[in-house]
Image (cartoon, rainbow, N blue to C red; front, side, top):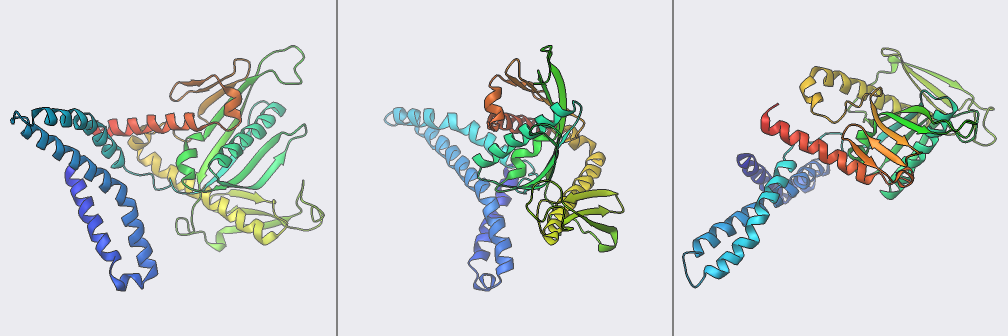
Length: 356
């Protein structure tokens, strides 16, 4: 580990020297790359220097213990420094874990009603609202791309949105899977608890450089929008349906009145889905790495139950239970997400240590 840290520190110093080179400053594209690399390494280097300073202080204090006049001060210094060494070393180990290259990306969020009919559609709307509230807390921007309303109340059969902001994927990537709800529906006269389910997919938004899509592989159809949208709805062919022929992946977007904007948004979703398919293929090959993750991100995996009669939310992957369901539905997801991140980090650390 320390050889690697020495190399990182040398790299950090070299990048710093490059950034002060006038020829690089004049090359803005390369300057951005170098400064980003310098910025990415900086927290690890600073933590390493903190670790080295603590270890050096401990060595000096131990040497001073032999001097009767300095012993008391040296012992006080040891008592202060020694408890800090192990936590800082643990932080360094975590910082050196392989980073998920998608963590900084925006996401395409897709929610769909599963078993449960109208009750599932109502829950789609409520969970989407929960994510909207969570996004507000992080000052992320949410843009709805498409949604299909159900026949009753405020339910949604499905909804697709793009969430943009800082480290969105790193926070939401554990939300993919089946979310189950247990409660008494408003239409239930006998007071029986029903179980319904929805699927959530969180896809990292792919850039054009990540996924190349050939024009010949696309079929683009236009149709009239339906639902809210003003006078142009049902009168202009602004809605767009894009089919990726090699994979038969279909994306629809009708949120905008402009066909061009709907096409742009649709392509963003298509790139994200194709990127996910490629990532899934790689994960299947790297079965060992996949096993180390909290969940596969598989939409068929039941990850969470929201039990309204018992005011309880349970995350089945880590056995976490929260008895403040109302707060969770208002977007108070951070404690759950923090617990998932901590568990995943611990599993990765264990895998690094044991070589599994």
